[in-house]
Length: 314
Image (tube, rainbow, N blue to C red; front, side, top):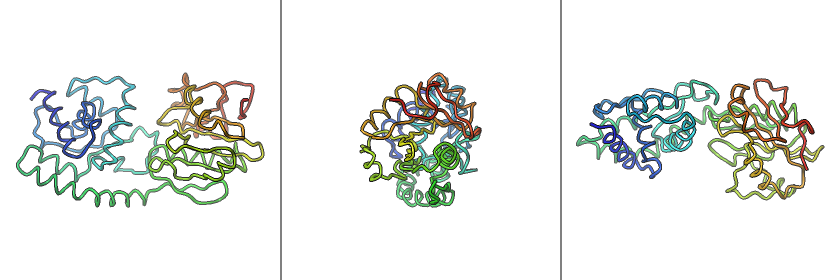
């Protein structure tokens, strides 16, 4: 069987599993084949479900199907295929360690056992019945996996002492560090007005308090990951967890300035990284007149422009 024929089969399989057109395209089909470790001449019954990172997925696609994605495609595969596969319960993230740090090189994905059992029957006489049974079970399976994830939620303590939790994995490990380490050091006495969760965008949203500060947020706007107000200085500190979606570059700085254009406090922009190694990947993109913080060196800030130190620019 040719690679294009097998890829087309995978696309049709994804469609049968209820995926939208974006998740049935060539990129998503090849990603599924890599996750299944299914070569061109294998039977669907040979499908497996190893735990693979994004780089390993791309290497498999290149070696087995001749599609050599550029290194910068990793983020596209992760954000526009793997995330949606996980939402549909086709795959699970880090089944060996659900609370794995977002910057861990061991971050991985695995086809769920329930989905694998159906996929292995693809092309056989029993596939249609297995598919119907599986789709009927998906809501219950999602509830089971959600319960398991709930047990692994990330606890954090807000500056006012209030306890809060975030969903496990993703950039939430870094967001916890931003709240518990950055804020006490650099924004003492501040109020946390917004926290974005990898699972629930508006996890903490002090809408009324933000409105008092002149901020009315359209919930379709792309909020920063953390918004903190410093009443003693009258500053709003807008922090991005740059471990996965990048830092405050010039475009993002403009977007945030427009989103908070009616705010009465001054605006401070901070890009947060798990470590300097990750920061170096984005160094050319970081906007001037912003600050950068790495959780591995929590007591230090890197300021891009020496005129101010953690302060707003008029």
